[in-house]
Image (cartoon, rainbow, N blue to C red; front, side, top):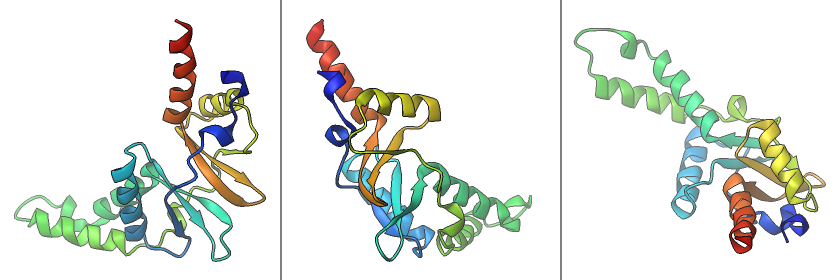
Length: 161
């Protein structure tokens, strides 16, 4: 049964997305909302105004942006009588007003809807990633997470034993 599964069968056709001109704050909000529904939603799809796939903003890229903004704030690097809470709020404000452009991951794993489950597994293992975009003709159709593949693979394994 597993050998007949395709990316199409495992993908989630409802996924978080933002436009490429969004702020980092918008991407954070969208990801947090998405994670309320499915905690393993690790990525937000980024589209241009025409709806074409541009890239992804992942948890890793958001945390990179936070680190750069927070650690860039000189108040956080000083020792002494610093109001740490205010310094952190200020750094986060700078971070959330940052445009998404420099944090978009453009070289992401992309699958075709008809790719077999073994191709999906191979892509996850070779790229050391936890998700892949399913797209055709520049249009994102869905997202497959490694947890989706795991559920499909182990469902058949459990039935065998």
